[in-house]
Image (cartoon, rainbow, N blue to C red; front, side):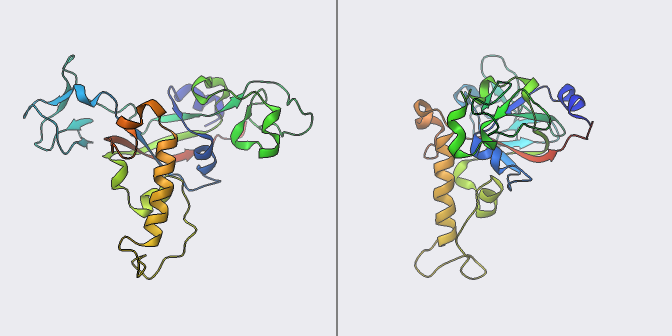
Length: 237
């Protein structure tokens, strides 16, 4: 599909920090993203009336409680469904500058698809001052250049991730594994796990609203949607 065709299909955007835009293929290894579920305190199970061990039922397309009952909103009665569905194509919303030319002439290379925007993820650190960056939440669909397909959906909490899952979130471990179990003699969890966990905690908390850290920060361990991703590269033309 061409970029124009992808724009017509991709009705929804997904916010990504600059670091995570840079971690997407082909530059990085990010193939999944987690989003904290909001307003969970307003939910309940139709069957048991409480909420525990929440999972996503792919067959029916909504959340289910550990007892097997459907999770619903207490006020509206509607089942809780993810924002995206498997097979959906979404576009990445990233920090951008909606100008036609860089303030420092001939410094920034033009994007091959959208010539009226520059993107923070592409800008060298020494030239960041050239632009008046706007938050990703304000990026219009017309500026979209990165498209992703949702290939899977599940429920998980930030503290449940394994080393491989943290790596798939776009983080890279610079420590060499100690043996086949990635363990070391002085650390029960393993040096590799400790290093990746610290990176993951820092990343997770950095993308949350500071005022909401008590509810959605790593220590709060909120229930999250996990979206498995694959890149969709526009055809030439």
